[in-house]
Image (tube, rainbow, N blue to C red):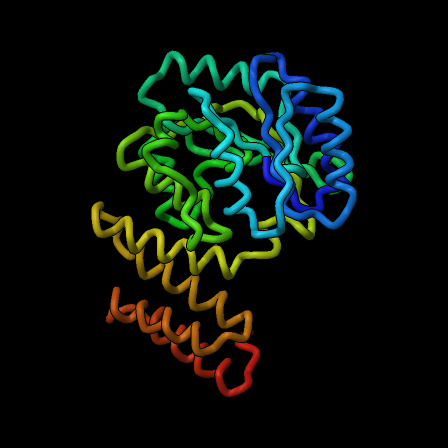
Amino acid sequence: MPVYNCERFLDDAIRSIRHQTHTQFEFVIVNDGSTDSSAEIIARHANEDERIIVVNGQSQGVTHALNTGLTYCNSAYIARMDGDDIAAPERFARQLKTMRTNPEVGILGTTSILIDERGKKIGHMAYPCDHDQIVMKLLNYGCGLTHPSAMIRGAVMHRLEQYQSKTGASQDFDLYLRASEFSRLKNLDEPLLHYRIHDSSMGSTSSAAQARAKYCSVAKYSRRNPLPSGCLLNFAHQASWMTAEEGKGKEALSYAVQCIKHSPASYLGYRSVARSLYTMVGGSGR
């Protein structure tokens, strides 16, 4: 579990793991240079629970924190968790049972209940359960599997080696695509995670960075695997559009050019070029 300035939610997140019905595990918490009281909260729980392994480091981003945590993981199964979410008590038990009876599954997620900053339920997020549907969802710019709900087979993670640092805010998306080439992805149709939506959550702060990283991941994936029609065009368009929204017209233009390269007949590329140029001359691009 990587942690960065999660003091508002961290106590609930840690308790939800400590109170799992499956009790035989090590709980690796990587404090990524938090400047709030997260370190104190982690230390308090570590003093109460010998299963907790605390790794304190400087702030280097979530991907670095994830890879640091992996160096402490030698188990046959590795479960992900975030410092602002809440796991259902039976999450590990349900996932382990499925992984043990389905050896072809390399990464197993669950559906999620969406909660707000106060923990109030605000929705439900369902995901496809079948491998092919999950991959298709990913390639159609959807969320095929929630990262903090994931349980990953240790042998699969060993083959993947680590999260790719260049993928930044989209490290989970990249991991799923790479894993799908030699292993099966699956979701349990059970809401075993309470996924918190708030202003500081990754999805709220890094959409443009995610779009750029996703395009790069899909472009690499396409060298070895067939893609749905228009897939690269759509990812390049999203990267260009969102980058223009950040005011980075020149960088947005580079992705717009890729749109035209992937589909010269599509209006999306020329629309992206126009928006990028408008941003470069001082327009907001919105």
